[in-house]
Length: 348
Image (cartoon, rainbow, N blue to C red; front, side, top):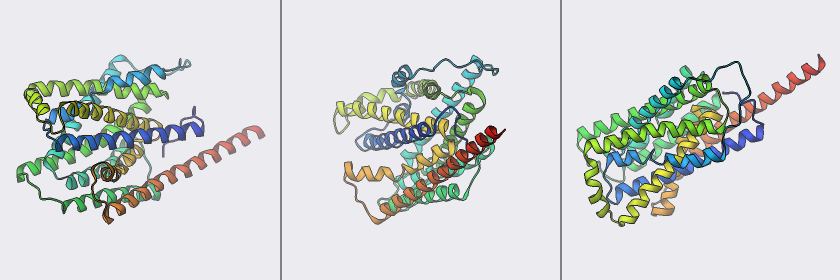
């Protein structure tokens, strides 16, 4: 497990963890529900669905001004060069743009059941990347959490298979399957690379560093999506798509706008958890939201709540508690080690 940042008190650390979990779960749930609403009511642009996942990055300027970085004390470690920072932000931005497009294709060509099941594999991919890139250790509680959350998402996939037939061709189904699998692997790689950047390159423990990482990578990803939107010619169909939207033009614009805001709030939570805890923990919380979304669908879209959904939710909560309990054990161990060190120092 990653050690707690030394400059943060225990209560501050847990406050940041809870705050970022709220950002991730609420942002991802809202954005996913609005994304489904967009497709169900007449939206069909893959580049637009990809663009809104990063287009709301200007909103990050608000917390960036509210929580500026405090002057760092002089250290022997030189700050990263502009070229290195540019390389990190551009590389991650390109990966994020490609990852978001693969997710858009996957959701377009696959039933939600298969899509959710394949997305759950991101935990397995992240376990591999975290082991090699972030020196992440595994304990029985972490392994239990990963297994339970994976089965939780898989249950939703099996249940959804019975709701409707797959109406796409075999070729498109294969494309959707490969794109979703590739997106899950790429997403896990992005999380591990972000954590590696915080540890090895940025070496700063401020909230503004997290916001800057998210904002600059989103700028790159958004530029790529805008270029793709115009290069593909999809921009010509947006006007007709807006006029043909079932709920009206205002609803079309608001759906896209709030989807963009939701994904940006989610991204802040993702990057924040990578910074405060680890990429694996961020991925576990992200997977935990998969069975949470159907709960909100019951409330807002009047979907049926059956035994399978309830069981999936219970498994997810169990896995979540298992992972949190492991961090609680590490927290107690860290406190004990600190107290022993202080006693030894006083005795000397």
